[in-house]
Image (cartoon, rainbow, N blue to C red; front, side, top):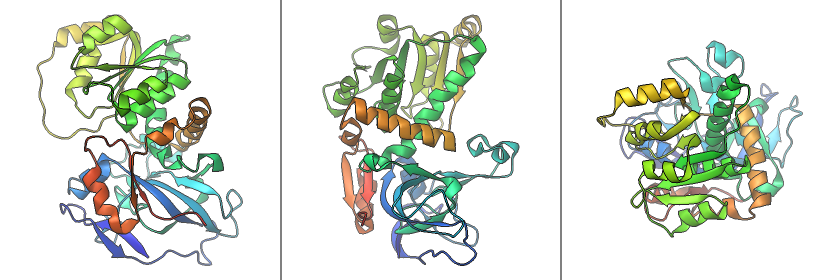
Length: 366
């Protein structure tokens, strides 16, 4: 079968390769074979292809890319009762390691130095025709979400971060956030606005580009507010539409995290979701930020990856959004690349103007 692979550490090494097709053998009594239908791409895939990080599975010299997979079950082992052929599924990206957190079902909180993630580190991904996984690491997607199921994995990133904010604020006994801000209007920022609106929050999305354009229209279609920081600085937006009880940073531009610290409301939570590289440095008012966080009982928390709970909750989020704003999530899927052969075209699209979500249509369901 075909797969898109990279040689980790070697820039621009992505290529179409023939790889062995996985099969369920007699030993795979709990195995599930999945036919890949769609795979979403994001900045992580682009960075791995640029040679910035990633590692192949043990004993291999290449890594199959793709961690945002969506597929259909074609075969199951004799001891599998949770799934059956024809079920639509998404695989959980991170696999359990050895830490205490891994052992209690929270591999996204692992303290292991080395982690195992499909299409990212030490485990092959989904830019291929088939894969085999255990049912414990597959999440069932309802047929009604077939057209937007490829958005499930990125939605889990948002769900985990927002859920962690609510979990942290259980310390207050009563936390009733009303106003929220999202920094960035890319895929993650838009999905964050979606989840916050489903929770009933008044949402302001702050992004650089001036509207109207598709991203700002999508924000407003949710009943949220779009603000261009070219016209209205963050501090001014906070005075007009805040104080913000919950802020979600999804820009990939680290200095904004410190700017957000300065406008976060009392008892507020700032969630950092961007994985940034580089060595940017800024001058910040450390005393003012410190006093504001101490006297305001504020919290800043980083979030990465997601657990099964987040995947299952995100199925509900997508279903809720589709019921409340029909067709909204599908509008995020702006660019489709047909087949693995044309996958290099997908990398060219990542990060270009007018692109929200790029995905590869690997196959159609039978």
